[in-house]
Image (tube, rainbow, N blue to C red; front, side):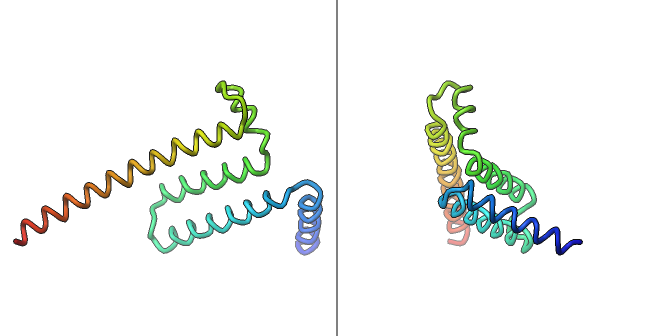
Length: 123
């Protein structure tokens, strides 16, 4: 029974992919799965915490959902007053990138101050 179910699922997925998905969607989904597998690997080796695993998992899940249903961004864009879903994705991406850049800059400044402090204590 399990083997028949697996075979049926594979046939369904192959048929769905052939008939309903663009090549870029398949490429992006494969990349998202690869990226998520790296996150999971880092969690299992205790390089990241559960909170980070959850955040990255939600991120890759949402990215996959947007790739599978690209028109969903148009609906959300309309609600917030933006013309196109692609514009919404660009705006959100830029905002997140600038926030991440700010966090990296802050951490770098903190590390530099700690190095200076340690150097002065050792001198």
